[in-house]
Structure formats: structure tokens, C-alpha cells
Length: 478
Image (cartoon, rainbow, N blue to C red; front, side):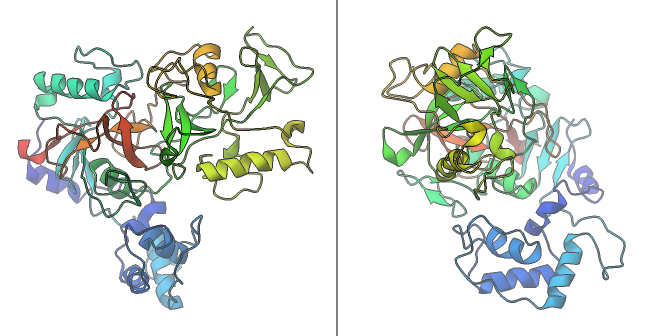
């Protein structure tokens, strides 16, 4: 049902902010907090600046919340009057009038997301668009379009066809649904690619970046939904996300080879991204026995899983780093990390327990991908069906998964007013603004934009990859 602007405005005054109080600094408007932000700005910190000079993560949060960034600020933090600091902390914690005051409702987000009465759409006042509340509708409604995976993921060409079919069906009474846009320039991004495209973290000028960083109030490397902790075959804590290998990409500028356990796609990722780690060692430990599944052997504790086809022993906990850091800094609370940190973490595994190594092993390693793999559907070591790599063999042979399938079920979690949010990569398109239509050409030949709701990273992806889709329509159709 279409809503009038009067109806939207009346809802605005009764809404409670969807952002968690932990992220209030992004919207804090009290005079005391404004003074701290002004002091940060005068000290040279800027919104969307490079690491070490970011207004919120490197200056405001350390001062007001005591949340220190993984890398220290490159500029001295300003000195703040203790009374100003105390007043700001009271406001952030929901207090006013001193420490004895009763907690108050948190300050509302200035860019509130307004859910429709039926919960099917969400109006984004900042972008002047209305999102579909179901962040994975293709998993249940294909509109007759082929090549959509059961999980809801699809390649870019299929995403374009699916949106067109959605419009042909006038879904929810609208025929101008579109993919979210990403602009060709974005000063809030941390990095710039070889074709001048902005990418990395803090990219809030794109529609999905605005949704993640501003409207939902998330920070790098937050996942929009909780991490999975259940079983996946004989493994535990497998994340339907990207995992690091130790192999460099064929083009060193592209970083290192990674493997997606959300779709079975093998590709490359820059070292600065946050991916997960599944350690392994070659060969079999003495004393391992057959499990109920004839494909696997396990030690007596169930901590190790031997894969006879690849002669590799895997750690059964596919996200050990979330609970055991071995003293390595730079590991995110959800267990993800950049590639440099992954190498340090595996080295610390081998040096642990007084040099005996974790579980008595000192030969833990990141899996490799080997030489160019003729089994891959794309050139070199890229694409689906890459069974020549250690993780590819695990995905396709041992776990018996197919291209486009996920190691765990699709998420049905909520994030703010959205449902079925996937903590993975979503397709976006090139566009000057959120209300602009998608341009036919992407940021580079054979690539299109994507954004991760698993950690806030914006980048580009091969159009043949399988990502998820969420859509909106501009206000002009309201």
C-alpha cells in the first residue's frame, strides 16, 4: 500500500532509532559530543578519511567510548575537558542531567528507515528511495527467471533479468525496482582501484554503503547479522563467506586467492579485506579413525578431520579464530582478518603450547591453490568448479556441493526493518545517485559493483560470480 508523505511524517515522530546504542557516535548530536567532534576535526581527523585519520573510528570513539582502533591514530588525539567528556558519555549511554538520571531513549537517527504498515517495504529518508524489506526475495520468488540458486544468489546478468521480470510483474504495485547504485567517485572510500574506481571500507556514498554505515549504523567489520555457529557436515562454525588461501593471485596487484563457501567461487581478494581462515596440514595424524561418514577420518577429540582424497587434515572448527587468537592482534570479533594477520595467526598456532603447536602440530598452514587449474570454468585459478585447489576439493568433492550452493543454509536473520539479510556480497550497479537508473556499463569490462553486508567492504566483482540481490525504487514513483 502506498503511503502519503503525511503518513510517513507522522510515523517519524513515533519511531525509535533502529541503530544500536553502540553505534550512536555516528549520530550523536549533543553539544558535548559536538565539541569532541569539533576538536577531532581541528586536530586533522576527517569523516571518511584514511586509516589513522578517521573522525569516528580513530578519534571520536577512542575518546568517548574507549574503543581503540586496531591500528593507532596517525595524529595526536585532542585533549578534552573532563566535564565535556562526561556529558557526552552520559548522552551516549542514554542519560541526561548527571549520573543519577534515569536512562532515556537513544537519540534518533537523523536518517531514519521507515517500515511500511505491512512490513514489505522500508522508506530510506536519506536516499529518497524505498527498499524491499526482504533482502533475499529471489530465494522464494524467481518471477520465472532461470539460473537463480536455491540460496537466492545469482550472476549479474541474471540479476538484471530478475529485476526486469519483477517490474514486468508490477511487484507490490511498482514497475521501477532497480539494483542499488554506486557512484564512480566516492571520497569516503579508503582506496582507489586501477581504473579509478573507489573501493574498500567506509564507502558511504553508494546506496548499500549508506544503508550499512549510516542508516543501520554499522561499522567496519560488523556483520549485519550474527555469525553462524552450527554444523556444516562434520565441521562446526563454518561461515558462508570467503576464506583465505596462502596463494598469491596470478596478478599480484589483485592480492591473494580466496574461496567462497557461500557459492563455491574461487577468485582473488586484496589483502586489506577481512576474510575467514580454515587451517590445515598435509597428511594424516597417527591414530585417526573412520567416522560415520566413510569420506572422513577423525581424531579421538573430533578436533581434526582427515580428507583421504586430498591427503589433507583440516581443523574441524572452521572459525577457530573467533574464540582463540593465540595473542595475535587484528583479528575481528567474528573471526575474520586481513591476509597479513592470517599468516601471523597460523604462525602463532604453530608456536603455541610452548612450541609444541596447537593440538600437538607445528605444521599448520593456510590452504593453497596450486598452479593454474584446468578444472576451473574461467581462466587460470578463477571461477566455479575449481577442484584442483585444497578448498575447492573440500567444497566440491568432500562436501559434495555444487556451484552456487552454500555450505550452510541461507540466513533468515533480521537487520533493522529488513528480513532474510545475507552476511555476504550483494550486487550493485553504476549510477550517479541512488535515484539514478543503472548504467549499462560497469566500472570495468566484465566487472560490476558489489557491497558486503558481512563486513562493510565495497568492491567490484566478475559478472559471472554469484552474489545476492536486494532492490529499491526511487521516490519519484511514490
